[in-house]
Image (cartoon, rainbow, N blue to C red; front, side):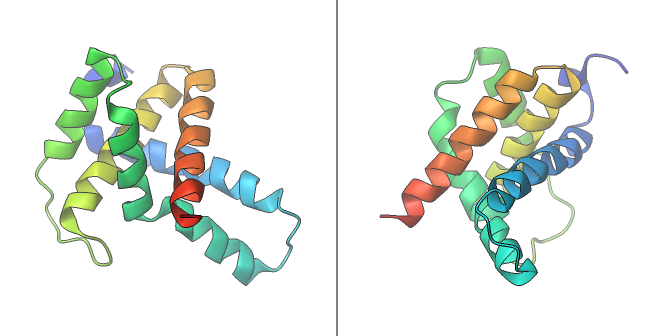
Amino acid sequence: MNDPMYDNTSMLAFIGDAAYELRVRLRVAASGSFHSERLHREATRYVRASAQARAMKALFGGLSEEEQRLAKRARNKRIATKPKNADPVDYKWATAFETLLGYYCLTGQTEKLDAVAAEAMRITEEAANG
């Protein structure tokens, strides 16, 4: 693979979505609940577009210039279909978030991926708690 920074942002978002979903599921599973419906409901609050958008907006200023450029490129990419259950602006910010995580994943920046995912989950929890 070439430098993932310049690869297709849709591919990076695809990988980032899976990487974040796994981290969210591990966190939710650690809660001790084993009821599948409750686990799914808990995970959904972290991975919905509005939560990812909120996290990306909060994290954006702390990113490097290179990371900001990648996030902007993903956010500004024209979407071919209308998101079903998300505000289009939130959807674009969420795509930027997933793209960034995909970039970290494919460039072997596991510690950065874990740190950003954990901070995004903390932001989501903080928003839910008021």
